[in-house]
Length: 247
Image (cartoon, rainbow, N blue to C red; front, side, top):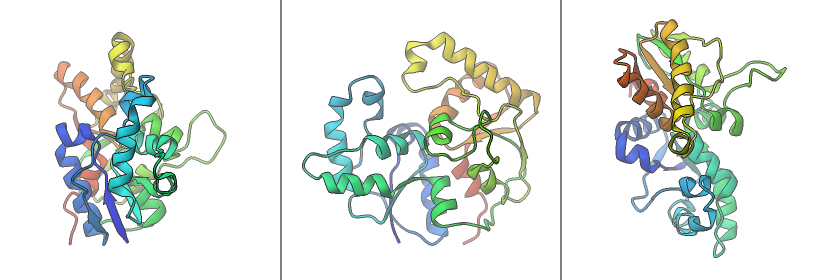
């Protein structure tokens, strides 16, 4: 299969190791991966701020870069959900529709498309998992605690394959961290309080790392942890799944 690697702009600028880990992981699992060099922001920040009419350039560029792939994979649930629900291109409407069907968040791709059942990775640490809202409620990467349905977690399933990893289940597994894109800018005080509450449970669980599939949420939590001078570190799930993996 031919896979197009979509790396969101904030990962490219601030957390390039997440992009590198995603690329290495997909290649080691047998995917033929290409990284379109002309890709840019997917347009989510403008759309979330009420300026969806300003995303036309982003949409057209995305279609131009990713229309020829069998699958598009990204290590970001929120950006993937934005493309799935909002990508459009007046000049190439059919290509936009096909991309919306072919784009996957990394954990979703590994479990639903590649159907990974063995992952020779090693990460001997105590880890807490953060379920980001877009991934959970939009992409259905994990079950929602308020619903009467069987419990599942695609990221948790993948982490269970990692040798030596001690995954600590949160009592409130789907609580928002407070990031919310531009919400953390316009409602700073509420956002920070939500983040502190989210971190509090992980502190009580004495985790060494907090992981998740959205670097945006992890970035928000990392800022709070650093201000608290906490020893807890942030790591994207791609970096864990790629750790010490054999060729």
